[in-house]
Length: 344
Image (cartoon, rainbow, N blue to C red):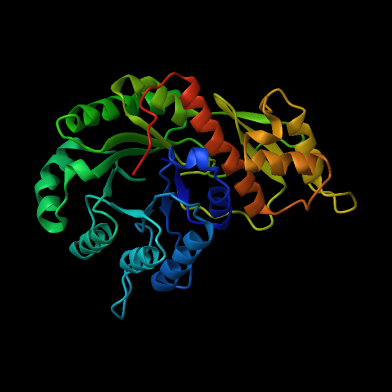
């Protein structure tokens, strides 16, 4: 259940999900706010989904970063749900314990249009999931939006996990919340975390730098609970934007690490991305399947051969997000985990 920003790179990666992976992925797409305002942001997001979503892919939509419109009767989540329903694209609205009555009404509208399923996302950038607060809120959610737990996925989001100390702190939180959740027939229970730093600009150049996937390690520690896996892809969990004209770079997912490649561009030379991709393809962490592992790996291999343009930040994020999705599903399958199942 990858939690992805609704940006060009992520949409491009989703557009190239092979049919065999679609049934194993339920992406939570966060609508990213811009200076255009929430109504236009919602319309742009819906259009991007329509242009990108593969057949049979169900997406979840989270508008928590959007402000409420200050005028008119338009509501972002309602607009997105209406548009996706008209285009035949299934979606699940995401709700939070602290949503206003108006936002909860939007969730109910969206769920009613799309089969009645929802996602309850506990936790945020400022607070851990809290089972006691969730327990107190369940009756209110049942009354306000007709929440049916059997039709609701539960996501326990601990946000940023970047160290052994973070893991030691959040593991008991997750176990306590799962113990509470197991009293109810949730459609699924998932733990979510992110481990990518806000910026990789401090890392060295001309050499791959390993970063530990602490988010994966959290799931490995608690997978005995039978819960499903979510992360923030190759991005930081926050809403930080990309740097203006960033250095050619790739964030490449391996079994336990990300390998961060940064190659400075010399204006007098050919684009640095070609040399970067050539180094990646020659590395030990290039998959045995090579370019056939994912659409993103095919794009990287082409650049290693000097084919195609060098791309931009959105392309680089698309290529490595595509690889990341394939890597996570492959890795969970290889781990022998038995709860990798199809999502509605």
